[in-house]
Length: 435
Image (cartoon, rainbow, N blue to C red):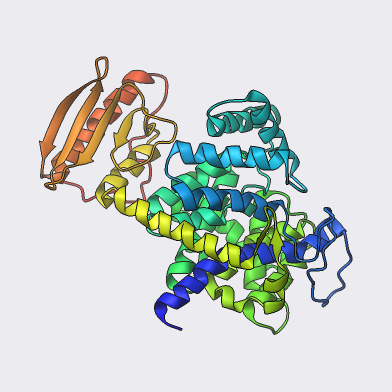
């Protein structure tokens, strides 16, 4: 197999691995069928559906909606996010099976609202639910997150944003978003490199305040078997159970199969844990590592089979690469944007970096930054009833960066006098050379 063929195999493996894990776990969800110690699970259907043999559940159904939008439009802009949420609302109205209570409640509110901006409506409903209950950290966004990774193989910075946007559409708790961001970055690296990444080494993509906590949870998962993390309806224990299954395969068969067997033996939400693990396992080992018996059986809403998922995965990646080429922000601009976000400024509200997507839209007043075609940089102020005023234009990036940061912080301070803006968001990181 050539390098290109091997990567294509891994791309196809992401959606197929998730779907096969889902269908393998369906019969045993919440103890629907007994599974003796050492017994290998089978795609016999049943479960909470009931499902036909090899039929996937809501885990893959919701992921297919994301993948379909990503293949047609990408996931960078609010119109695509709206299309995903509207797709979920339509799915909830016809075709959905075994929908989680939190997801049903949020999407039900969107359907009743009839908003022309479904993603904003959904995110607001999820936030309102969180304010009322404080309990929105279920595993329902992590189970569907794999297609987001495929959409941003060439754009890790936007991957971090998009994974959280789509998590927050139904699951407001930041831990749910953290889990999606981490898992998507792991899938991305596995597809690109063909090896299992060290998950604890990826926590740097998360907010500093929670990095140590996640590193501890990952270490804990590596030290115990999957059943130690049941019940696993909570996003952290679902994440841990999936990672533990990957690190503690059951039996001597091929690694992908042995780890999915271990995921199902974790018990409780078996289809979800196996779907989460399957996406990363497929990214590492490829679709060719899945048993032909499984590939022949796996199917589900909306009338798709294994070859359809292969094609869908390829199209997601192709569209993602195409869009990344057209909208790539230079690395130094991405870094300064991340610096300001870490300090507590609002992207799209206080500042805007051209090439960085802002799904919630731009404020009527902000400080902007862009790189021009000749390689120089420009900082501008937008305000005064929509008029633009250039502040600095130079090829000296250090000068431009300093002015952009200064102006952005000044604007933010003027707007939020009672809100603290951090001076140094991460003392362990040098954002750029001093001096």
